[in-house]
Amino acid sequence: MDERDAQDGTAVGDAPTGLAGRGLVAPGGTAAAADLRGAHARDAQAPGAHARDAQARAALAHRVEHVTAAAERLLVQAVEDRVRHGRDLAPEHGRLWSDLGSVLGGKLMRPRLTVTAYLGLGGTDVDAVAPVAAAQEMLHTAMLVHDDLLDHDEVRRGRPNVAGVTRARLAAAGVTGTAQHEQAGAAALLAGDAALAQAFALVAGAAVPAHLVGELVRLLAAGVDTTVAGELLDVRAEVQALADVDTLLVAQLKTAAYSFRVPLESGAVLAGASRAHRIALALVGTALGLAYQLTDDDLGVFGDPAATGKSVLSDLRSGKRTELLRLTWARTGASGRAVLRAHVGLSDLDDAGAARVRDVMRSCGALDEARALTRRTAGIARTLATTTLPEPLAGYLAGVVDDLVARGH
Image (tube, rainbow, N blue to C red; front, side, top):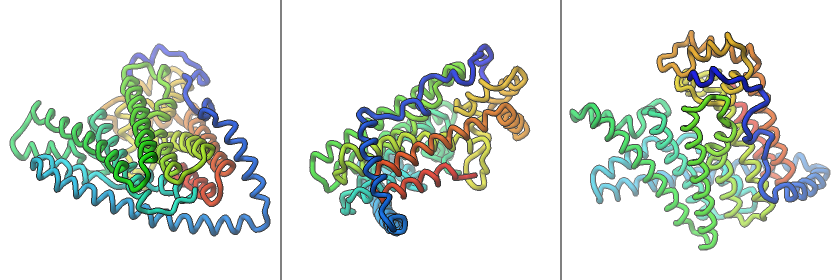
């Protein structure tokens, strides 16, 4: 850990002003949410409502998987088309898209959220929503490629990413040293740019009225801009004292906006949802995104790599500024801070050193406090979903909250 942190004496409650219980409100959101809560509370009293809601949620879940699969096929087709088109322009361009295609995929959480909001608010046209859902995953891929570049990572999901594959290819061709490093970085930068452009192309090609395309493009662009703000704060945090970093704001801007709020709102826009429902989904997405990131940061230190596929050393080695680490620094005493300074940010940190850091996090109460914050934030997302949105969408999203926060534990 950096010596800048050694001078700090900030109390636990003195976190900079970010989100967590502090600002989960969109403009006009309070009144709209209150109106919806009253309506849905009255509906919930109907006899047999629970049984009917459970059946409707099961039906929605089935349709979500069916339409998400269609979005995935469209995503694969888009990459294959880009590879063919790229080869026509230049063999290197086709190869870049092929490398990019190898890192696409995963759980498809973002497309699934778009599809969920769309179907849950009455949408029925698969051809309309599939390209918009696919665009969310293409945007996510662009963000991952650029994030890996900023973090100097060349492995993603256990295999070489665009920069890693490019470096290996260059090494085999005899390119070494600075030239190899610069070429690998350039490939990652350009691949991320290409994926970003294709995300907008997918939205532009959706079979929906022009005014909806315009609104969807604006949503996607705002999500990109918000994420850039979060990435910038995250990068700047590396040269700041830990107590000066608003870790929750970084999570809100870098993760919650493009991964949760934008996908949910995009589905609502396509479905022709009311302003009140759009605001509700924006609030759910923001709270869910923060709870997701808090869970991710927990798993990055205390998770089971066999279950999560995520290292429990890399975040500590990089000195990643998380809310868990901030709370630990604020809560622990001189001996605990000495452990943090000695081990956090150490590029060759071993299991024994990481265990010492975990001991400090547990003993000072930071881990318990971070997990309590995760539960509270997830509770906000769950309550917002179940009191402001119609069934079966409300119950389905409540289940998503529970699943995402419980993962890996």
